[in-house]
Length: 216
Image 1 (cartoon, helix red, strand yellow):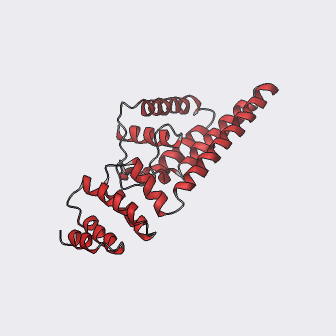
Image 2 (tube, rainbow, N blue to C red):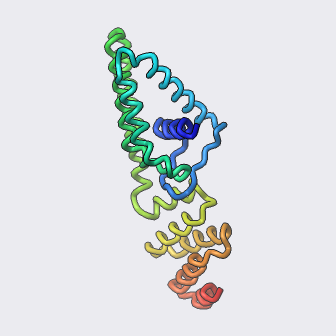
Image 3 (cartoon, rainbow, N blue to C red):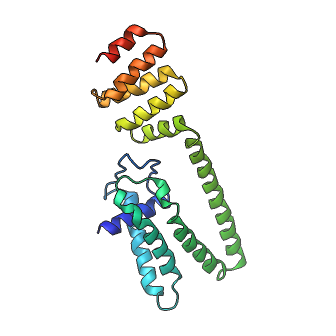
């Protein structure tokens, strides 16, 4: 049962049905009753049925599916701490299956339908390129990465801490203060955040505030 739901979650993330997660140390929990996860589980069942129906005369669906599952298997131990980059290699299996499906349909339909398929494929590639561009913006530097991560997981203290460090490295002192204050609302006893607040105020020249934080 664990394998079934893990594969369903991975398939949903690979097909962009389940919200992405750019880091692997904040838990990314999706309820089993979530509609997109249920849809992913349905797709897993359909794929399993196709493997069973087609295995007598072709192994291509089995090959693509096994490639996806077997290259995914080493990362399952990290659930629910699962980042999207764990799907880079397994997604090759899905791309292979998609290519096989496209070739099958393209070779059997009329010219008009072929053109529609070709246009749909070009549109899909354009959408994926746009999404890749947007994701690359997130990975532009530490500030953009931790800012997006903190938005995705606002209750996870470590992300606010890392975002504060990124701001501090860029001398964005007021932003760093905001990040550490957000962290302390989640964990009032977070010692590194308290010390870093003292450091930030010292850099701003507000030494009374700096001593107050360092003495806590």
